[in-house]
Picture 1 (spheres, rainbow, N blue to C red):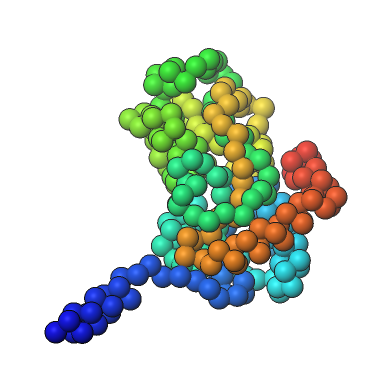
Picture 2 (picture 1 turned 120 degrees about the vertical axis):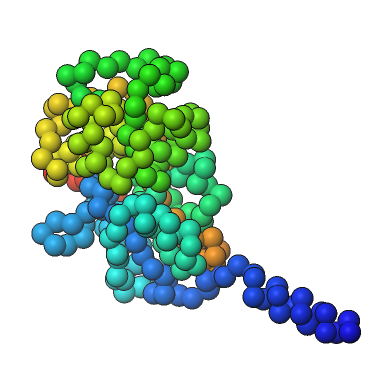
Length: 251
């Protein structure tokens, strides 16, 4: 009887234990979003500072270039949480996210800011003033996490599928502010046909770090090996050239 119970408990522990991933780098599933200048398509080819860094990491590891799938951010973020072999980049490492994934950092810094139309003449001096505005976010992105979990806003957040949705709502005055990364903002505005000169940063929310995020089931040694290769890549003088190429040159 004891042996039967033991066998049942052992079987249950195997069935309900969290999945783990211990395969090689080639068996990881790499995902990203369209988010210039970090990762985006140009003439049908994936490029951006994150893409170039990842290719250099693969080279450092002796790994052939792998397939990278581009998908909407909310979907990619959900799949990262659910699938044991997923890697997503570039992910801002916020307090809320830190315990959710395993990390290899940095790709670069990220400055999450609040943006408004210049014509609205909005001035924000303190976080308490945010309750007077409707704020657009991209679902599950860093700005939304910061507003919900660090600033403790909720009722006046409009969570949308893309920056394009927020820009449309801003024009209609359905929202008065939206969150985005200050580095990515000018490129994204131009991509959708908007003039960056018509927008202004009205409040800096937080400076954080853009990283590669791994599902928690990915083996620690694999993440550590990736991290070591990443540190070699960003300590190389080529990294400064990449940084200037993508962040200090208009695209």
